[in-house]
Structure formats: structure tokens, C-alpha cells
Image 1: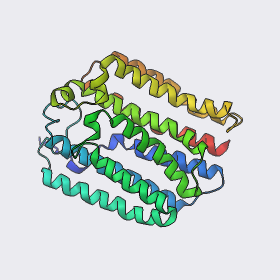
Image 2: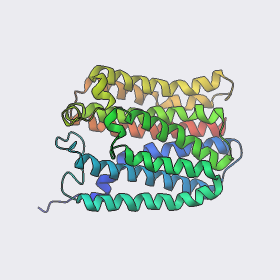
Image 3: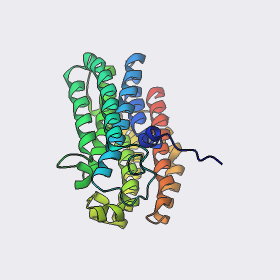
Image 4: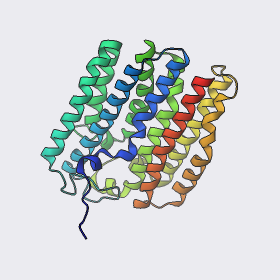
Length: 295
């Protein structure tokens, strides 16, 4: 029987984590649609740019973790560079191409949104590369969680909203928090799984710094915080009626995920929990977006 080799580019793209880039665009656009501001072409371009930025970040992470020796012991899914499916040169070239495509779409978006979008795009690419590369790699200094919170949550949602509405608002910041917390939760699972290997490789993630138990608490708090945001919006009077309850329909999934995380030892068995957390992020975001539009 012939052995089916995985497509190395799709493998390195980590498709199961892409809801982290799709979800904030959906939420930010829904907030603008709630205010009768929506351009479908801007939405498609924003979504494409967000996905390309995450794929580029994943490619960069694949090759730079390999070059730094952090992939000697793998508990997560196969890496394209570490497994020899792609050479470091090929992966670096692929990273440059993907970021180039994101930047080309970013030019169109910058023409619409002006210098704030140009700045967001430039910082996103710089930080995506600096996540594992350069003299001060963010992930190796315990800053990966903060990077995910900011760029896959606050910046992504507020940027998507700004492109449709032309403004940044306090409401768009509050609405961005669930995505920020879910994106952080995805990183938390990843770092919990790799805690031992990262410690051995000198990769001082937040999980390495605070330990197993505190990392599991962090994950729990991220999910709890995400579900509190719709309640905060309701209490604050930003939303009325019943629509704020829609995201809570996904709460049973969150409870099961949290239970499974606490029961699962540090091992490859955490990989499905990472993928399920990304799916929950998307489910919550769609329900949240629908609630914002219908409210």
C-alpha cells in the first residue's frame, strides 16, 4: 500500500488553527453591519489578508523553531521543516511569498483605511516574524500569549471594524475581547503540550515560567472571560433584548473542553483540545456576530 505523504505547505499552514484569524474579522464586520456600514469587497479582502498573515506566521514559526532547535522533541503535529518535507530555504521562501501576498492586499486596504491600517499591517508582519525569529523572539520570552491576545483579538477585530466604519470605538474594543481570550487559550494549549520540550530547548514560554497547574488555570480563565463579555455589554446597555445570550449557546462545549483539558496530561493527547478550542472560537464568534446584527 502506497504511503500518502501530507502536502507540506498545507501541513505547515496548520489549517485547524485558522479560525483564530477568521473569527475576529467576522465579529468586527458584524459590529459595523449592526451600524449599517458594510462593504462586501472590504470584508473579503480583510478576511484574505488575515488568513494570509496567520499562514505566514505559522510558516515562520515552522522554520525558525527548527533553526533554533526547538523542534528536536515534537509533541504537536508534524512540522514540515523538522520532518524534512521542506528545506529551511523553501520554507523561508514560502513565508516571504505569503507575507508578500498579504502585503499586496494590505495596499488596497491601506488605501481605504489610511495610515492606521498601514501601521497595523506592518506591525502584524513584523511581530509574526519576531514571534520565533530575531534576537528577541516573542514566544521564547513568554510574550506569545500577549501577542495572540493583541493581534488575533484586539487589533484584528478593531481593524476589521475600522475598515468598514472608519473609526475606533470603546465598544469595538470590548467586542474584541472574546476573540483575544480565545486566541490566547489556543496558545495556552499549545504551550502546555510543549512545556517539557520547550523547557529543554530554552524556550521560556509563559507555560514554562508559571508551570502546568497555573497554565491550566489560565486556560480556564480565558474561556470564562470570553463568556462574560456579552454579559458586560448587556449590563452596560450596549446591547438590549435577547441576542446577547446567543454566544452562551456554545457554553456546554466550553465546559466539556475545560474538563477535558484538566483531565489530559501533557502529551500529544492535547492536540485535539487545541483544534476543538479553535473551533469553539469560530462557533462563539459566529453566534456573537449574529447577536450583534440581530440585536
